[in-house]
Each structure stands twice: as structure tokens, then as C-alpha cells.
Image (cartoon, rainbow, N blue to C red; front, side):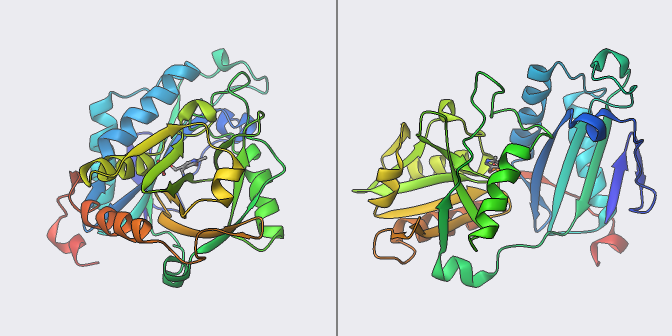
Length: 297
Ligand code: PMP
């Protein structure tokens, strides 16, 4: 693995940031998680666009242009030699003093980590996964817009702890009105009477790149889609349910809070969309040109 840190590509051991960095002190920063499939950085443009949108909302000045971040990401993947890997792009407010004021942080810290990730085991895609609803609601938009992919994940982490304690890998998060928002690190979809449905982003969900890809694939397949208000009742009574995310891709859900969803097996539309996603993930994105000696690793 290799790390880009403020303009230099360094080894893991040398990838160090200050304890005065406000990313560390206050979670003041943003990030992206991106996958590389056979040397294709999947939907890199969309990830960089989302990074800059998060930065804009937080008044966080990224000390590089859009093009420079894109090129640095491609170059760091090339330097790693990894063809199938994960990129963690982090921009923090940078080094400041012990107060929260970002005005005392003159320059943002830019980090691009290229590494492998642990994935859900293949059998989860075959058998499907159970979910529970978290007692922790998703942060309301009035407090902090969940569309910002910030370094503050404690709301989601509280829900993840509940999931783990219940013995399941993910938890469903509702918004403060009791409507379905998303999961701790994934968006959620249901299928009902042939229609694909997902909460709209104003319900308190991240605008997932995988979510958007799946909506586009559904449109290509002439599957009707709906983005709007969804209740837990809709999930309990759905024909199919699945999660989407960069790490998860498309994961079938077979129960929620002990209620079986559909026939308790991954559904046909879920399978079709996962297959379509797996076909597009090597095509749509930025291609990496590896140096020949690195490409063999
Ligand atoms: N919601 C949350 C809270 C997330 O952190 C993520 C990313 N892991 C997602 C949804 C899915 O987004 P994407 O498809 O862009 O990975």
C-alpha cells in the first residue's frame, strides 16, 4: 500500500499527521471511499465532485484543483501497483491550535490511501443478510446535512455498535420523523410490485455513488423507480430489499427486526442489479496506467 500525503507519495510507516490536525482533534474534515476494479477507478469523477461539494458546504478550502486531486489519485494508485483495491481520500481542516476555530488552520491536509479492503464474504451475497433498526436516529438536516461526507461518523458508529450487539452486520437508521433514511455506511432500497424504491436524500441519506449507479442501471433496464418517503412498514412488506455502497456493492437483505422480507431469499431484481453493477464497475471511471514493473504486483 502507498499513501499520498500533502504532495508526496510515502510508505505507510511515514504517513503521519500532526495531533494538532483538526481532523484528529475535532473530526473536522471530509472523505471519500473509492474502489478500483482491474485498474479502473470506478466513478472517480463523481467521487471527486462529491468531495468538493462537501468541502464547499463546510467552507473547507482544498489546496488543490479538481484536476490535481484527480491526477494525484490516479498517480497514487499507479504507484501502488494494485489493480483491485480501495482508495481512501481524506481532506482535513489541517494543523491548528487547540481551539475549534478553523480560522487557525492555515492549510488543509490532503491524504490519499491506496490499500486493499476486507469485503463481505461471498456467501452473504448468496444467502442475504439480516438487519435491525437502530434506536439512534440519523442526524437531522437542521443540525448537519447527512449529504456531507464528513469525518464525523459517531452518529453512524452508535448505530453500528447496536448492529454488532444484535449480531448483524448493518443497522437501518430512521430520521427523526421515523422515516427510513439509510444504513450506517450504505443506502437502502426495496422492490415492491416491480418498482424500485429508495428514500430521497432529504430523508437524511448520503448521496451514494452506488445508489446513483443502481438507479441509472434500473432506468436502463426500464425498471420504474421511486425516490421519496419510505417507512419501516414498507420494508417489512417489501418483495425484496438490498443495500448499496462502495464496499458492499449490492447486498441482499432478507429480514428486518425479525420480519422476513419477501420469501427470505435474495430476490430476482437484486440479483439482476448486482450483475449489472459488476459489469459496469470495470468500465465506467478513470483508467490507471501502471508502470510495467509495478503492474505485476
Ligand atoms: N451512506 C453512508 C452513511 C455512507 O457512509 C456510505 C459510504 N460508505 C453510503 C451511504 C454509500 O455511499 P457510496 O455508494 O458512495 O459508497
